[in-house]
Length: 429
Image (cartoon, rainbow, N blue to C red; front, side, top):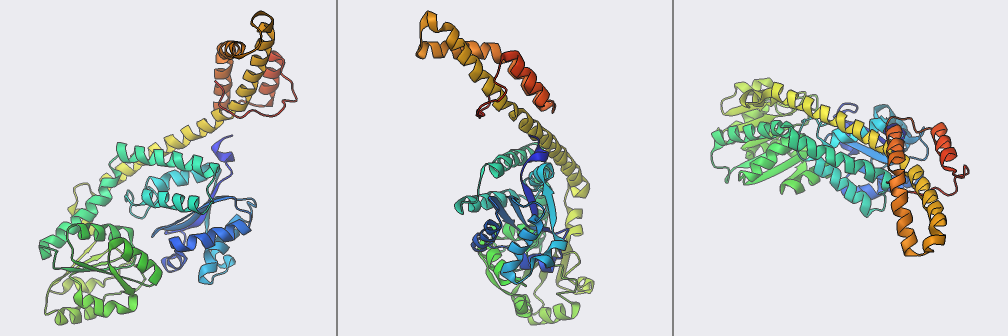
């Protein structure tokens, strides 16, 4: 078997395929995963993992009915929020077999995130796995691929500096906030939406001593999840006007297509604050903060481009590290594909070993009799005789040349029963 033949698929929506407003509605909280997996099981799905983050909502699973899989996933994700599967299918992407492996490797390595290299995603994948295991939806097909994905992510983290770029942007933001406000222990912050870089900055601000934090979002359940992680208060986006009055730092990342914070509204906020300065970090695309806010005294606005300019690495450095990480992922995909192919030789080698051990025992039985000693001799001699044939079979499997003709030739050379009998599972020697 090669990766292309693996019976797994990844189906979902992400920041590239689905409008933010729709993707945010589809966000699946941990408490809702059981319902999604329950719907999938009704449709015959044997193994499934649900990954829901700011960037994506996707299902990795073994599907019984491949052609219907996108509609199955769309129905499972849409049902909790009153959407029909048919409405979601146009926004859904699908990866099968080897493409699914590559996608999972890239996700775990933080190469498929809006903020490339962001360090939280690997933990999110592992948390999704644990939840799937708790719900009895885990299995060998998913486990095999995910363990390989974790190994790739570790290599990317250890052998590239891809994670430093995202961290450096967040650190730059925190330094600028401290330049303006100094000690953060008496300062308050406001997070609007769930942009990944914005959340990284919020985490670092909390670590730097930010006293109080509030999370506002269009969707209360996502606001509640984010607030729990940040040890913050939360509320609906309707509370924005009042929340701005108390916020010394505002981090926004909705990208709603309209300005959430206009110059007129911000001027009114500054008057009510008696001109106490506000640091605004606009991580949204398109922008959430009206450009005219830049001209207001005591309103200090930074966007991602501004943070890029104050970091040493800059965009070019992060892109170079991302390219290195991408090459590591491609190398790992090829190695995983070869591993699967080589593993295909295992049953053939095990069957051949069983046959030879039986023949050797029969040949030495008259001399030393049956029993543990004869078994040990048979295993040792069979192992010696099979070393070269086993390596040859593995090489042919890795090259994709372990076909029926080769198997027939081995059977003829060694006098195997061509019926094969029950297959012996194992790696051989």
